[in-house]
Length: 193
Image (cartoon, rainbow, N blue to C red; front, side, top):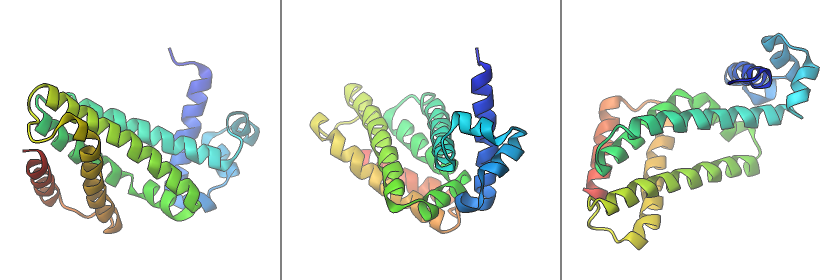
């Protein structure tokens, strides 16, 4: 059951998200967020100490939604290669849909905060890819890689995938679906096929 506190916080974050995507972090104020929510500014400060706290909560909400979406799609796949392809494709499409949020993180936060967000994302995603590979190893779908190599292989796969993703973001999100699918199929098949 969702309580009143969760509903208020969710409303704050969804409205803040729209404002951050439209005006950026620097131009968005707590007054604007409060007005957009139809709440007093003091209500925002009851839940968040600063605009940066609101922004960090928006980023965390986005990551949670992204991961939930990707996991739901991946869980429907029957084998390791299809799981990896689905993971890569869905993660890419969802991040491209949120490219403005990525750009805000990159451009407007201090380098340390950007670095911390990026490290957190990379750590989680590497663990997720490792789990897919470990399952494939246990099911004898992964033959060319030893179990003890899965950690660094998943790290290198993630690095290659993130390179493709960041390239797409910097090109204004343009990487047509045909090229994306071809790149993913190539990358997954050559590394793990």
